Length: 358
Image 1 (tube, rainbow, N blue to C red):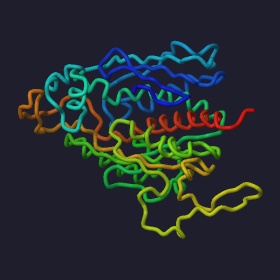
Image 2: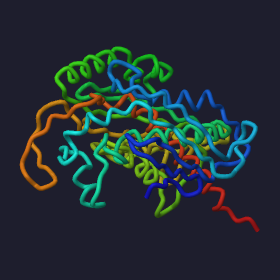
Image 3: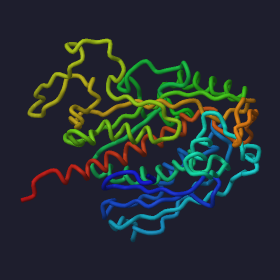
């Protein structure tokens, strides 16, 4: 399953230390103006080596489109693209060739396929997510035509977390700090924690919050294919994601009378006075802001000695080498946005198949 989506579909290919990462996007509507500067900017947000709190691997991450675009617009045909890898240090992984790294996909991949590319994790590497950011950037260009906006930010790193809902922050400040947190004081504390953890060769996890504004009423299927299930599927398919919740989520210490979203007539438009549902009711968007949170585990590669086993099942130990993120959150923000954007475009196109046309 290397393909994501129903109508708007992304198929990705490539490995961390292979020649390139790339993909094919099918089902993108024709006539969308392709803003190359915007697409490259989106890739730069995910790019390694962008700050002192991310991996120092240096990649230009420049995308080359091979098909599906003519005179700056999408043609409706498959959009092929490629991003070449040019800064691999494969020798950093020589000591891991026959060893299973704790909490990595090494063991499961070798058992599933009988072979694995140990260089940087191969296909299981988060470098694959650059293809998703290309798909997400094109999806954002479609959503721009629909006045739908997707915004994500780091809301927690370790024990440091934002206490208010997204409405309590100036989201225009997200890109003003390397950690991509709109609370500048909390951002400074997060950066300090990441630097401390990194100095010890360890890693730390956290939470990304995503907000989707302008979604029309009616996106999502009634039973299988509920919109929140689709978003959850998209998020849980991102490397290192361990949890997903939307609306009030696991904050269940309330009664129905306290959290029901009451409807009212706002000058002829039906609105809700609160949004505990997170913009989705019955699996279908209700027109309010959609918001959800995505939990990321600490990066599994730590620069410390760990006990493990080799491919023959023999006990051994391992100390990883190479260039790794101490915290994936800053670079995960654009990936969350990309997956959300592709999901919303896909379900917008699906919604066009639900109405009678006779």
